[in-house]
Amino acid sequence: MNNSLKSSVPTDREVILGILNNSEDTLNKLYKGYFAMILQFILNNNGDEDDAKDVYQEAIIILYNKVKEGNFELSSKLKTYIYSVCRRIWLKKLTQNSKKTGNINDYEDVFAVEEDVEDHEEKDLQFVKMQSALSHLGEPCKTIIQDFYIHNLSMQDICEKFGYTNTDNAKTQKYKCLQRLKKIFFQP
Amino acid sequence: MRNDLELDAIIEDYLLGKLNAEEKEAFEQLRRNDATVDHKVVSHKFFLQSMEEFAVQLRLKEKLNSIHDEIDVETLAADLRPHPSKVVQLWRKHKSAIAVAASFLVLSLVSIYSIQHNSKQEDRYEQVSRELSKVKKSQNSLIRTIQSNNSSAAAKNVNPGNFGGTGFAVSTNGYILTNLHVVNGADSLYVQNNKGESFKVKAVYTDSQNDIAILKISDKNFNHLSTIPYTIKKSISGLGESVYTLGYPKDDIVLGEGSVSSRTGFVGDTTQYQVSILVNPGNSGGPLLDNNGNLVGIISGKQDQTEGAAFAIKSKYILEAMRAIPQDSLGDNRLSANKRSLLSGMKRTKQIEKLQDYVFMIKVYN
Image: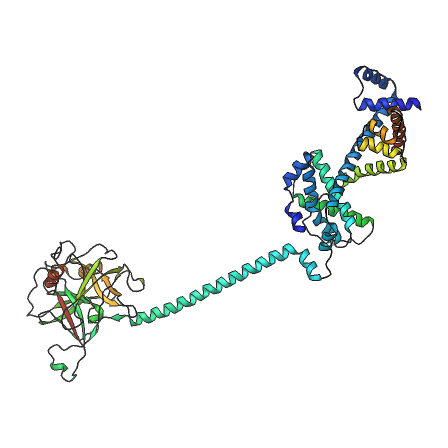
């Protein structure tokens, strides 16, 4: 398993190009390529499989966004970058939970990624805000908003899905929901 | 409320670029005039942006989750979980360090082995050199110890003598060249030609470095020889050049044939050739000639343990030795490097027939 995963790891260049071209295949290979490394790191540092998943996905997202923004300069091996980001995130989580952080068991080289992680955390705050705003919205508003803005369904589809008599009704409903969402979202 | 909703719809359409030119113009007019509308536009824009980013993020997360589901996390986790055994943990943690250490260990083992191997070679070399020094000691100087069968009768013997060697004439007036080790420490010296006539000689020049001695016949009965047929070869002989020697390992003259087998002599001595001629005690001092009757060297010794390896002093040292003698005493008819050999082009048997008058047995008494 381990071997088969490792054998399909794409080269760093392939990953960057793949992300820029929205290649699902590259993302798949990238994800599977380094997951074992992070899983090992987390498992050996007071974490479990779910922690590994969260931390790893966050790191992949950081990498993904950074590449998409076009300011990703590969100053080290991708593997080292991912490992360093995960390590940083996991260390933060450990300190937050005041678990012991005395000695982290390292498995790879590390280099400084604090900036990247902090940038991401700032952005993540917005997402958390949006997430909580959505969850406070209640049904059916939440689903309508999600369907329209996130899943990119047309008003026609939403109309049919929720059984509105016409799209205008659905639109009105959507704007009502949106108004409420904005209210929650912009609450200080 | 109703108005607000409509405003929202228009703002969103405006931001998404769904308004036509006329509506857009009208809306922008409204926006310029009404600060609250403008504020709403900006905030909605920001909201839409956040929403879009959120959507992208969510979609990516969904993708990642679906990929994650493909991984058999449990098996992997079981593999990577901190192992109960400390050894395995240590191995995993320090895999690369251990690999480096291991390769270093292998390398040092290899180098230690090679050093040992080398020192073994050195040993062998020492042994060889010891053998060599033994050989050196036992390198035979080819002096014939003449066995006196009846020691009591020795004194009366026609050819009495304790040692014997060979020499050859370098001038017609009785200068004879041989090895120093043949005549060294002699009380009295005699030479005997192939007709059996003996003449008393005395050493007039010795060169211990090159092992060369020049004798002069001081006997009144000695008639001058006719012109010396051979000449000295000035150039170095090549390997494989066929050469021969005449000498007195016994009481009659003996021919030895072979070829130059090395440009250096015993343990790389550059003053000598190595020749593949079977020589025996008594051959020392014999002339070494090539097919044209040029003097290539002087037979001086052989190696003890090696068969067929004899050594001959190179001919240029003959010239050096001759220069050390007062030139006029050598006479006009002397051995030189400039003349053409009289033996050149003759058959071997003819050459020897001519040569044997000029090759002498050296008899040493002490």
